[in-house]
Length: 102
Image (tube, rainbow, N blue to C red; front, side, top):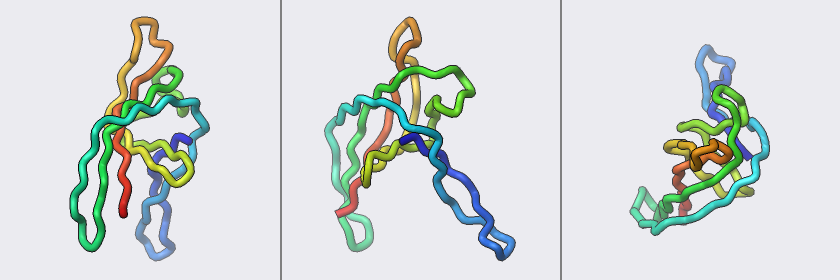
């Protein structure tokens, strides 16, 4: 699923962050080599990924952009950049990072 960050009123004059589902996309995920870092009381693994999806017109809700994320069950892939994968612009290549806390 493709998700975008949204701001939701907290009822006290402020806002909280949440994620809104924009749609379900076919995707091919290719993982790169990852790394582990220590964060507070847990270990965090970060794995860079290249995710290929079918192209959509600029401005369409189904076209991924940096700052959005893909969700596959409990797995989250944060999108850092998006480029056209081929000369005919039939596919998009999303440079993303999967973060796993253990």
